[in-house]
Amino acid sequence: MSSRFDLPRRALLSLFGAGLIATPARASSTAPGPIIQPVPASTQAFIKRAFDMRSEARRTGDQAYGAIVVRDGEIIGQSPSRVIVNTDPTAHAEIEAIRDAARRLGERDLSGAILYSSSHPCPMCEAAAYWAGIARMVHGDAASDGGAPSLCG
Image (cartoon, rainbow, N blue to C red):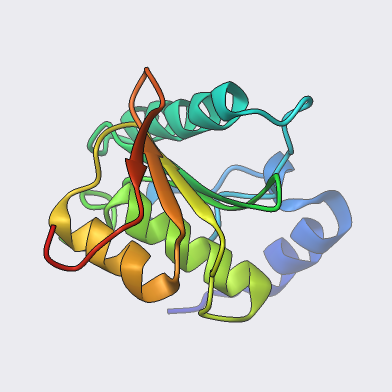
């Protein structure tokens, strides 16, 4: 549903960048803002970003999960869990990060990408990673290599 404030807000976002204007939790189905790449890019930096997304989920009142998608050493998608704020049982952090990457790239094929998440992906998220062409999953504080996603575990 649009309001009379949509156009000015869009204009402000384009002028000043999405990261400068806070949006209500209900509008969280959009990308969580521009992606700032960690320097140096490393497994530990990527898993830290997944945990940053987990902190964002907590901050907005959602379940404490976060995930990012990385290809060729760059983050291409990121998201906190949005199950509660979007009242969507499928809005797990991993699926939302995959959706974010696909939207940003304008394609559904994420072949060769790595999914980093704050915890071990559930079977639904693993299946989504499989269908997206994710090459590997890495999860948890220890950055455990979960290997390639599969449909039947």
